[in-house]
Every structure is written in C-alpha cells, then in structure tokens.
Length: 169
Image 1 (cartoon, one colour):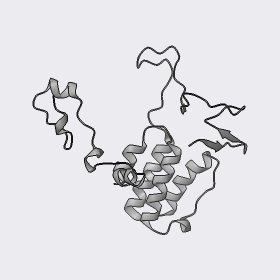
Image 2: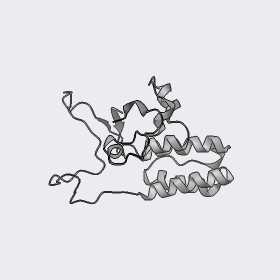
Image 3: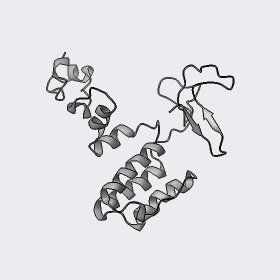
Image 4: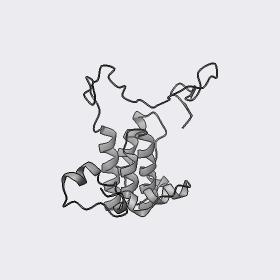
C-alpha cells in the first residue's frame, strides 16, 4: 500500500513527502510506540483485542454454522459503519463461501498491520496458496514456525517441526 484516500477525500501519499521527496523508514503505526520505552516495556496501552475483531469473529462463526444471515451481516456492518464505508447486504453474499471470502478480506482491511493476517490465512487454508499466487516459493510446512534453537537446546526431548529438521543444533 503506497497511498490511500482519507475520510476527507484527500489522497495521502505514504512514500513521498508534500514536495515529492522519498520518505525513508516508512512504517504503519496505528498505536504509536512509547518513546521512553525500555525493551518491551511500554508506558502506553497496547491494544490486544479489538471490538471489531470480536464482531468479525462472531460473524465468521455464524456464517460457518448457518451460512450468510442477517445477524452476521449486521455484525460486519457495525465494523464498516464505524470505518465510514459502504454497508453490505445479505443479498450481496448468497453463499457461505462468498461471505467467508468477504469476511477474510474485511479482516485484512480492518486489521492492516496489526499482525492478524497470517493466522487468518492459516485458519482459512490460504496462507501457502496466496503466497504462491504472489510468486513466493512457499512450502506447505511453513504454516508452522520452526521451534527456536534456544528452546531446542534447553529441552532435548523437543523435535523440530516438520520441514525444519535440517536446521537442528
């Protein structure tokens, strides 16, 4: 993502300043880090679970149980209304599969740079196929991380996750 249109209708460029000069070290900060932090200890509050996550999880669960329905669409629309974007209707998503894909896409938009995407794609069985579609040499075993070497060294009964065996001690 290199630019977006804000709620006032103005385009915001993320890679260049107002004069067109390239910006260095551009990062998304939804929750600005504490400048006085030491290591992982922040003096500000960090969001762990958002209400939008609860609403979209419930909509996803309802869709899996019963297919698209008014309640699940209403839950998604609560998130979309807060984001000031177009509301959806039940008739837009007549099948469980189409609504499932829409909710996954909505989670991608809502939780951009919040660290939830990998788990969402794994849950939907799309992590590897999506990576391959983007030209990445993704392997099926990469839905799991390797067990860190420090943990392997601390417990000789641990066995490395499949696919990472050649990276032993």
